[in-house]
Length: 345
Image (cartoon, rainbow, N blue to C red; front, side, top):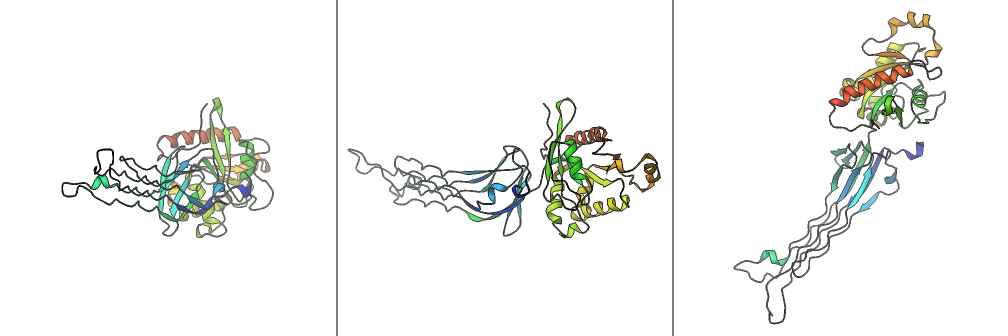
């Protein structure tokens, strides 16, 4: 996914359609010069609807189209005919899209399932025709309701990447390289910090036609929870990953220190992130020999499963897939309704 094409935050202006006015018509026919009221109702104004689409990974479509309008309802007419409903506007969005009121910051809802539809702005109701107002004391009501005006306002759409596994680590620790080896994704890889500035997502092909989604989240830096760098924008993508894969180089000077930094940033941003299953991948395993691994055993955190992996030699890659798939299956059984990308043929 090209950097310029990944958009995870947009502010858009929406205007739903106004309802059509009710009709104040009276029935007239040959021999019936003074028939009763038969004015129909006005049509409803068009809604603006968000629809989940699992084939989308970005909010790019809204970058250049920030003003969206739905159709207006039509007036009612004679013979109690209701006016046509205004055209709804259906906006396809990626799974994991959150809708907020731009003025108050209130979260309205989140789209998590394919083809899930939620109305973000309702169209105005159509006005009632004069036939509704006939009574024993008012046989000829010469009035009808106007249509209700549509809504208008600014809204924020914010994307939190949905994936079964999220790669978590400091900048330049080999996350992108690992993703490129276990999936078909082609992230930019270079030997400097912040090569990854937008999430990259790939499908890991597992045994018997099974697969699961893995996301490379841009590197976390210390005090990211305070918004340092692009901290909040990075951290929010981790919230919708079912399992977290911590990546720390096997030849790092302070493995336990890096792990503490990552845990601290996640906890301060959202303590619930620590409830997710965690796995430690000690990347660049080809840079250390077996003797050094034994000597550094006491420096490695013990509160989570750990594996040495190498994108160069393939060491530990199959075992890592097995471990992650098992955790995903366990997590998927009791998760809170978010639909992840794991598939079976």
